[in-house]
Amino acid sequence: MNQNLNLSNQIYQMLAQESMAYLKPSLELLVSELKKAFSIEKEILKPDEVCEMLTITNPTLDKRVKKGIFSRYSFDDGRGVYFKRSEIISALKKVN
Image 1 (cartoon, rainbow, N blue to C red):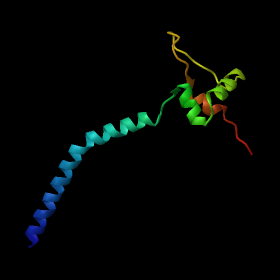
Image 2 (image 1 turned 90 degrees about the vertical axis):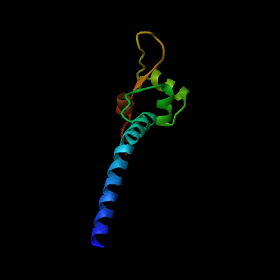
Image 3 (image 1 turned 180 degrees about the vertical axis):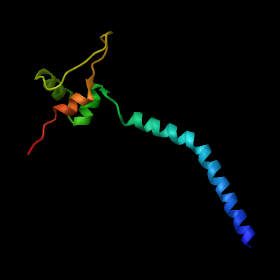
Image 4 (image 1 turned 60 degrees about the horizontal axis):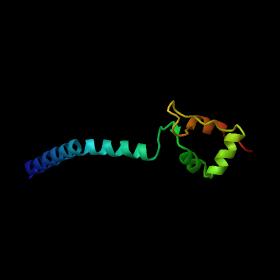
């Protein structure tokens, strides 16, 4: 009986190791995709992402840019407008 129990434990451990080896690449890919989807560690944001982050509208974002609260950025090709997450966070002020 004790031998059967040891054999069962060995089989269980082998199956667990093989399952983890099989699942690990898929789990790593899933985590990577989730990070992208939820903008984790993403520094460059599109205007709609800033609006969603701050729960404001595009016109409100434009007003804040005109007031100098936020800065807009573009790449050399001139296509698209972007914002830096760190600057958006820095612009937030503590309210008592």
